Length: 132
Image 1: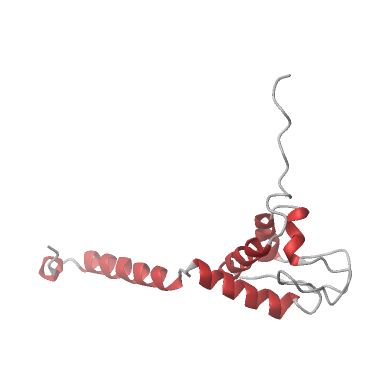
Image 2 (image 1 turned 90 degrees about the vertical axis):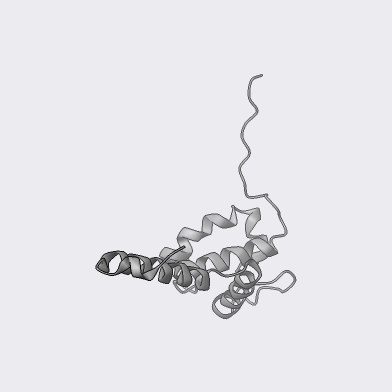
């Protein structure tokens, strides 16, 4: 059993334990449940992207040139967007503003996008057959 009296005269040990407890508590509070991540990701893309893009399973893109997010996996794996979301998405057309998100938001957005894809796995390259 742990006893605080063992730490008397050992301030660094007490500090280390206090820091470990604080990190564990903060880490537990910051970790979102999968459903919470999906809901937060939906809110983020609706607020930041929904002006031009279709951001749900059934809506139409307000801007016909903007791809529907539910079909992104037809082009490439959705998780490949994580780096671009974190560093800033730049496109070849001036109508789209640059966006960048902190890591927790990137995870939430990726979880949401994965949850609405209509082309499961279509964006994944297939390996050529071996042998033959």
